[in-house]
Length: 460
Image (cartoon, rainbow, N blue to C red; front, side, top):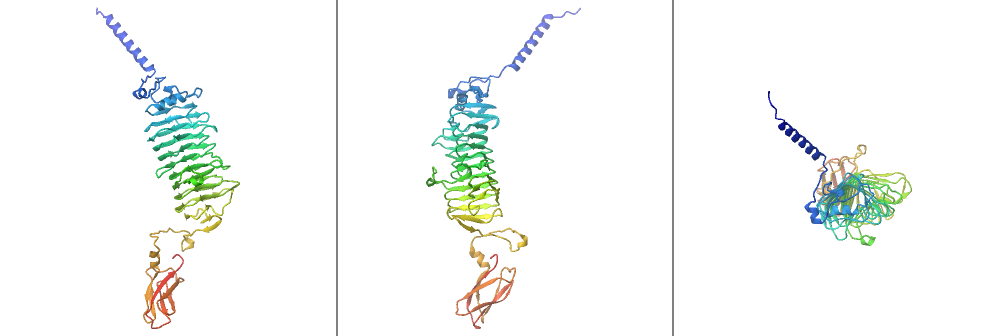
C-alpha cells in the first residue's frame, strides 16, 4: 500500500491559500502615492495620498462645492507639476496664483470641472513672467460681483501659451491679458456682467480661433484687442441691448491705457447683434475682413457695421456679407469713418459705398465688359499706371501729314476715343478707326510733326 505524505499536501495547500489571499489584498488595496520631491521642495504636504500628484483632491479640494477649495488648489499650483481639476464644482474665495511656466492646468471639460469664485476676486492670476502654459477643459462660473476670470499681474509677461476649451462667465473680463504675446485662444467662450469679454494686448502672433463672446454689457466689447491679432471663425454677441462686437487699436487720447497700431485679420467670423458698431478700428493700422458676415440686430437702430475712427493704412473687405435683420442703420453706408481712410471692397456683399463724417462716397467697381457674363476674374500684375498707359498710348511721327497707328492689342470695338496733341501749330484729327488701329491726319498736308496719342475706352 502506497503511503502519502500528508504534511507536504497540507503545506502546499496552505501556501496556495496564502498566495491567493495576498493577491486579493493587492487587488483591493487603495493606491498610495508617496510625497514627491517637487511637493517637498514647495513645502506642500498632501492630505490624501490616494490621489496622484497634481490632482487637487490630493490637497483637500472638495468637488461637491460645499467646502472652500482655495487653499487646496493653491497648494497644487505651488508645486511644479501639471494641475488636474477632476469633475466637480470648486468653491473659491481668494485669487488662485499661477507662477509656474511650462505647465498644464486642465480638467474634464468646461461644463464638468468648474471653479466657482465668490465675492470681488479675480479667479486665476498669472503672477510671474510665464511661457508655454496650457490651460484647457475647465470652466469659471462667477456672478456680477466677481472680477476678472483669467488674468495676469501688472508688469509681467505672458507668452507662447494656449487656452483651449475654457469657458468663463464672470463679473469682470473673462480673459484679461494686457501683457501677452504669441498667445492662442481656441474654442474659448466668455461672458461679462461689467466689462469687455476678451481683452488682450495683441501682437503679430496672437490668435483667436473658434471663440465666442456671449453676453457683453452696454458700452463694452466682446473682443477688445489693443494691437494685432488674427481672429478665425470667432462669433458673438448675444446682447444687442448694449454690447459691441469688437474694438481694435488703441489711443490714449481716446481713453485707452496705451497707444498701439492695429493689424488685424478676420476670417470666417460672425459679427452679430451688436448694439452700435460691429468692428471698430482705432488709430493707424491695417485690417482685412474676408469670408465673414455682419448681422446687424433685428430691431431699433445702430450706427454702422464697420467703423474706422482714422487710419492711413488699407482696410480690405473681401467676400464679406452684410445682413440687416430689421434695425435701422443711422450712418449712410455700412462702412463709416470719422476721417478719410483707405478702403477696398471686393465682392458683392454690400453696396460699394462708405460714409466719411456724413459725406457718402462710392467706391470704384470692377466689372466685365460683357454685362451678360456678370463678373470676371481680374488679375492686376502691376499698379504702375505707366505700364497700363503704354499699352494704349504712344507717339507717332507724321509723314506727308499722315501717320498710321497699329495696336499691340486689338480693341473689342471701334467706339473708342483717341486724344492727340502735337509739337506744331496744326490741327490733328483721327480717321479710319478699326479694332486694329487708326490714322492721324494733320491740317498741314506736308507735316512731319511728332504727335502724342492716348486711347480712352471702357476698361482702360
